[in-house]
Length: 116
Length: 114
Image 1 (cartoon, rainbow over the protein chains, first blue to last red):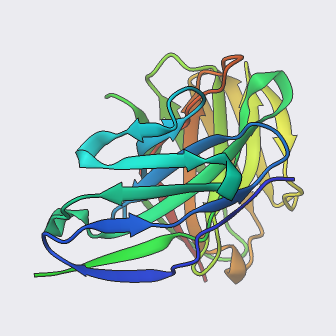
Image 2 (tube, chains in turn red, orange):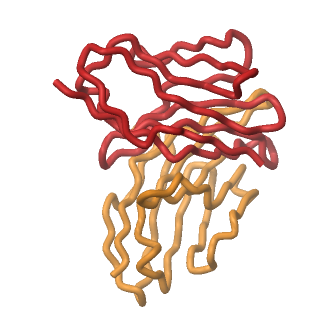
Image 3 (cartoon, chains in turn yellow, brown):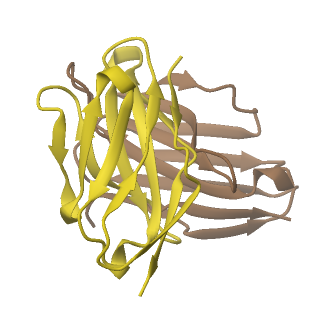
C-alpha cells in the first residue's frame, strides 16, 4: 500500500523568502504524485502533478516540484513567497483503483505561515 | 455553476437526526469520491464511484450511506452519527484515464454532530 510523509507539520517563512516543502512517498510502482493547497474553510486546489516525463514540473501560482525517484521524494518549491501563499499544503500519491479511478493517499499536510 | 459544488456548506445535527450531503460536478467527469478530513488526521478516502457504480468502500461505518444516481451527482446520507464523525466532508470528481487522472475537489461540508 502506498503512503506519504510530510515531515514538517508547520513552517514559517518571511514574505519574499524561498520555500521548500518536503514530501516522501512509499509506493511499489511508478507513482502519480500531486500537491494540493487548502485555504481555511475551503476545499483542495490542485497546484501541480507528476505522471511521467520531465521530473521538474511547473504548477500554478509560481510553484514547482521535483520528482526524485532515488530519494522517493516530491518536494514543492517556490522562489519567493507571497502573503497569499499562507495555507495548508498536501502531498498525495495515487494508485490506479478499480476501473482506472485513482485512489489517493494524502500526507498529514504542512501548514505554511508567512511573516510580513 | 462550474467545477464541483457541495451543499450545504455547514451542517449541525443531533445524533438521532437523518441528513444528506449533496455533491454536483459540472466537469463532465465520470468518477466521484467522498473524503473525510478530521482535525489532526490526513484526508481519508471513504467511497469511490465510477460510472455510477461503487468501486471502493474504505471500511466506512454503515451510518454513512452513499448514493450516486448519475455521473454528475453524489450524495452522502447520514443517520445515527456520533460526535467523532464531526469533520469536513469533501467531494471530488475525476475523469479516469489509463495514464492517471486528476481529482478536483469541492469546497466541502463542515459537519458538526452534537
